[in-house]
Image (cartoon, rainbow, N blue to C red; front, side, top):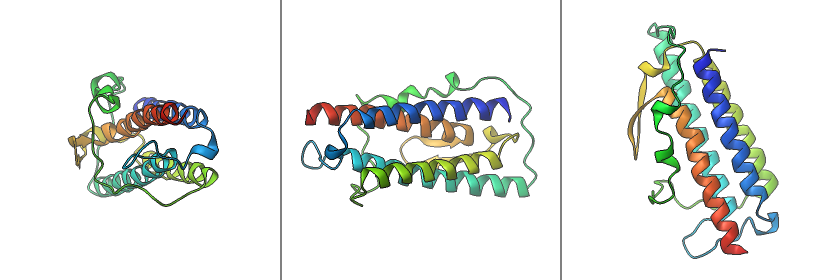
Length: 177
Protein backbone atom coordinates (compact mmCIF):
# COMPACT_ATOMS: atom_id res chain seq x y z
CA UNK A 1 0.00 0.00 0.00
CA UNK A 2 1.30 3.46 -0.90
CA UNK A 3 2.44 5.45 2.19
CA UNK A 4 -0.03 8.27 1.49
CA UNK A 5 -2.98 5.90 1.34
CA UNK A 6 -1.73 4.02 4.39
CA UNK A 7 -1.45 7.30 6.33
CA UNK A 8 -4.98 8.34 5.40
CA UNK A 9 -6.52 4.97 6.15
CA UNK A 10 -4.82 5.01 9.57
CA UNK A 11 -6.21 8.50 10.14
CA UNK A 12 -9.80 7.62 9.24
CA UNK A 13 -9.59 4.37 11.22
CA UNK A 14 -8.42 6.34 14.30
CA UNK A 15 -11.35 8.75 13.90
CA UNK A 16 -13.75 5.81 13.56
CA UNK A 17 -12.48 4.34 16.83
CA UNK A 18 -13.04 7.73 18.48
CA UNK A 19 -16.55 7.92 17.01
CA UNK A 20 -17.40 4.45 18.33
CA UNK A 21 -16.05 5.40 21.77
CA UNK A 22 -18.19 8.55 21.74
CA UNK A 23 -21.28 6.58 20.74
CA UNK A 24 -20.55 3.93 23.37
CA UNK A 25 -20.39 6.68 26.00
CA UNK A 26 -24.12 7.28 25.50
CA UNK A 27 -26.42 4.50 26.73
CA UNK A 28 -27.89 2.78 23.67
CA UNK A 29 -31.43 3.21 24.95
CA UNK A 30 -30.82 6.98 24.63
CA UNK A 31 -29.47 6.94 21.06
CA UNK A 32 -32.83 7.90 19.57
CA UNK A 33 -33.35 10.82 22.00
CA UNK A 34 -32.53 14.29 20.69
CA UNK A 35 -31.36 16.90 23.21
CA UNK A 36 -33.78 19.50 21.83
CA UNK A 37 -36.02 20.49 18.97
CA UNK A 38 -34.27 20.45 15.58
CA UNK A 39 -31.27 18.79 17.24
CA UNK A 40 -29.86 15.47 16.22
CA UNK A 41 -29.85 12.28 18.26
CA UNK A 42 -26.94 9.83 18.25
CA UNK A 43 -28.93 7.75 15.73
CA UNK A 44 -29.33 10.83 13.52
CA UNK A 45 -25.61 11.58 13.62
CA UNK A 46 -24.70 8.02 12.72
CA UNK A 47 -27.24 7.96 9.89
CA UNK A 48 -25.81 11.23 8.56
CA UNK A 49 -22.30 9.78 8.64
CA UNK A 50 -23.44 6.71 6.69
CA UNK A 51 -25.03 8.90 4.01
CA UNK A 52 -22.01 11.19 3.71
CA UNK A 53 -19.45 8.38 3.69
CA UNK A 54 -21.44 6.47 1.05
CA UNK A 55 -21.59 9.58 -1.15
CA UNK A 56 -17.87 10.24 -0.76
CA UNK A 57 -17.09 6.62 -1.64
CA UNK A 58 -19.07 7.10 -4.86
CA UNK A 59 -17.27 10.35 -5.67
CA UNK A 60 -13.88 8.73 -5.15
CA UNK A 61 -14.78 5.63 -7.11
CA UNK A 62 -16.12 7.62 -10.07
CA UNK A 63 -13.26 10.14 -10.23
CA UNK A 64 -10.57 7.49 -9.85
CA UNK A 65 -12.09 5.24 -12.52
CA UNK A 66 -12.44 8.11 -14.99
CA UNK A 67 -8.91 9.34 -14.33
CA UNK A 68 -7.39 5.88 -14.63
CA UNK A 69 -9.15 5.49 -18.00
CA UNK A 70 -7.56 8.78 -19.04
CA UNK A 71 -4.09 7.64 -17.96
CA UNK A 72 -3.80 8.87 -14.35
CA UNK A 73 -0.16 9.03 -13.31
CA UNK A 74 1.32 6.94 -10.55
CA UNK A 75 2.04 8.70 -7.23
CA UNK A 76 5.74 9.50 -6.91
CA UNK A 77 5.61 11.49 -3.65
CA UNK A 78 5.67 9.50 -0.42
CA UNK A 79 5.74 12.47 1.95
CA UNK A 80 3.19 12.90 4.72
CA UNK A 81 0.30 15.15 3.89
CA UNK A 82 -2.02 15.07 6.91
CA UNK A 83 -0.59 18.24 8.47
CA UNK A 84 -0.81 20.20 5.21
CA UNK A 85 -4.52 19.36 4.91
CA UNK A 86 -5.44 21.46 7.97
CA UNK A 87 -8.08 18.90 8.93
CA UNK A 88 -8.77 20.56 12.28
CA UNK A 89 -10.80 23.22 10.47
CA UNK A 90 -13.44 20.56 9.81
CA UNK A 91 -13.44 19.34 13.41
CA UNK A 92 -13.93 22.74 15.10
CA UNK A 93 -17.39 22.66 16.70
CA UNK A 94 -17.14 26.41 17.43
CA UNK A 95 -18.14 27.05 13.84
CA UNK A 96 -21.66 25.87 13.06
CA UNK A 97 -22.03 24.10 9.73
CA UNK A 98 -25.52 23.40 8.50
CA UNK A 99 -25.74 20.16 6.57
CA UNK A 100 -27.40 20.31 3.19
CA UNK A 101 -28.90 16.91 3.86
CA UNK A 102 -32.22 16.96 5.71
CA UNK A 103 -32.39 15.99 9.36
CA UNK A 104 -31.99 12.21 9.31
CA UNK A 105 -34.94 10.14 10.47
CA UNK A 106 -34.53 6.58 9.26
CA UNK A 107 -35.08 5.33 12.79
CA UNK A 108 -32.29 2.76 12.73
CA UNK A 109 -31.68 0.72 15.84
CA UNK A 110 -28.20 1.06 17.38
CA UNK A 111 -27.17 -2.28 15.88
CA UNK A 112 -28.48 -1.26 12.44
CA UNK A 113 -26.67 2.08 12.65
CA UNK A 114 -23.37 0.41 13.56
CA UNK A 115 -23.81 -2.17 10.81
CA UNK A 116 -24.56 0.57 8.27
CA UNK A 117 -21.41 2.41 9.38
CA UNK A 118 -19.37 -0.75 8.85
CA UNK A 119 -20.88 -1.15 5.37
CA UNK A 120 -20.22 2.46 4.37
CA UNK A 121 -16.62 2.15 5.61
CA UNK A 122 -16.13 -1.02 3.58
CA UNK A 123 -17.38 0.80 0.48
CA UNK A 124 -15.11 3.77 1.18
CA UNK A 125 -12.07 1.55 1.76
CA UNK A 126 -12.76 -0.32 -1.48
CA UNK A 127 -13.00 2.99 -3.36
CA UNK A 128 -9.75 4.23 -1.80
CA UNK A 129 -7.98 1.01 -2.73
CA UNK A 130 -8.86 1.51 -6.42
CA UNK A 131 -6.66 4.60 -6.29
CA UNK A 132 -3.80 3.09 -4.30
CA UNK A 133 -0.51 4.13 -5.88
CA UNK A 134 -2.05 6.75 -8.14
CA UNK A 135 -1.59 10.53 -7.94
CA UNK A 136 -4.90 11.33 -6.21
CA UNK A 137 -3.68 14.82 -5.34
CA UNK A 138 -4.04 15.73 -9.02
CA UNK A 139 -7.78 14.99 -8.97
CA UNK A 140 -10.38 17.18 -7.31
CA UNK A 141 -14.09 17.37 -6.67
CA UNK A 142 -16.10 20.24 -5.16
CA UNK A 143 -17.25 20.13 -1.54
CA UNK A 144 -20.48 22.08 -0.97
CA UNK A 145 -19.08 24.03 2.01
CA UNK A 146 -15.31 23.95 1.53
CA UNK A 147 -14.83 24.24 -2.22
CA UNK A 148 -12.62 21.99 -4.31
CA UNK A 149 -10.76 19.23 -2.44
CA UNK A 150 -8.28 16.87 -4.01
CA UNK A 151 -9.04 13.20 -3.50
CA UNK A 152 -6.50 12.82 -0.71
CA UNK A 153 -8.22 15.73 1.06
CA UNK A 154 -11.61 14.07 0.56
CA UNK A 155 -10.31 10.97 2.35
CA UNK A 156 -8.92 13.12 5.16
CA UNK A 157 -12.21 14.98 5.32
CA UNK A 158 -14.03 11.72 6.09
CA UNK A 159 -11.94 11.29 9.23
CA UNK A 160 -12.20 14.92 10.31
CA UNK A 161 -15.95 14.87 9.69
CA UNK A 162 -16.25 11.84 11.96
CA UNK A 163 -14.12 13.63 14.55
CA UNK A 164 -16.49 16.57 14.44
CA UNK A 165 -19.49 14.32 14.91
CA UNK A 166 -17.79 12.32 17.68
CA UNK A 167 -17.58 15.61 19.57
CA UNK A 168 -21.25 16.25 18.77
CA UNK A 169 -22.20 12.83 20.12
CA UNK A 170 -20.35 13.59 23.34
CA UNK A 171 -22.29 16.87 23.57
CA UNK A 172 -25.54 14.96 23.04
CA UNK A 173 -24.60 12.54 25.81
CA UNK A 174 -23.85 15.40 28.20
CA UNK A 175 -27.14 17.13 27.35
CA UNK A 176 -29.13 13.94 27.92
CA UNK A 177 -27.36 13.06 31.20
